[in-house]
Amino acid sequence: MNLQVTAIRSDTDYATDQNITHYQLLNWDNFGIGTLSRSQVVAMVEAGAAVSVANPEGIQIPCGVNVRGNEKWLQGKENDAWTDDVLALPHVQDINGAVKVRRFTRKGDES
Image (cartoon, rainbow, N blue to C red; front, side, top):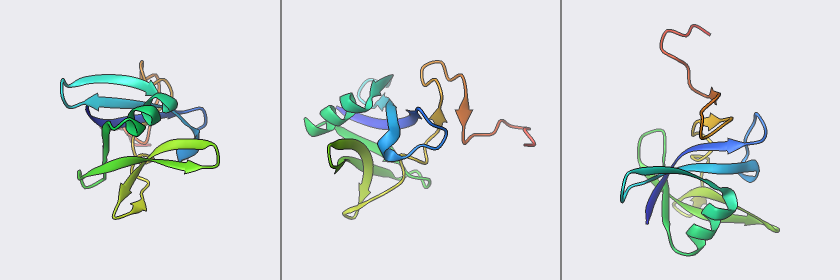
């Protein structure tokens, strides 16, 4: 399976890798989009699924499972260093309905 993270959801306004609750994923094999919980995505990566995230330059960065104590989360990893590329993705309040999207401005929006 070849997946790309396209958006994240957390329960707070300021996401950290550890408080992301859901990831929106694009399946490059069939172009399907789905939303999975953090534990589901971590289990998929640990089972061998290839997951990536596009950095601001559009380069695909492979993701791995980062661990601190009992917590596990998905994070980009390039040149043996963890990146913040997942945190740079759109952060949506309701990832399925896209009720509120942060980090994007609408065309013509002056604020």
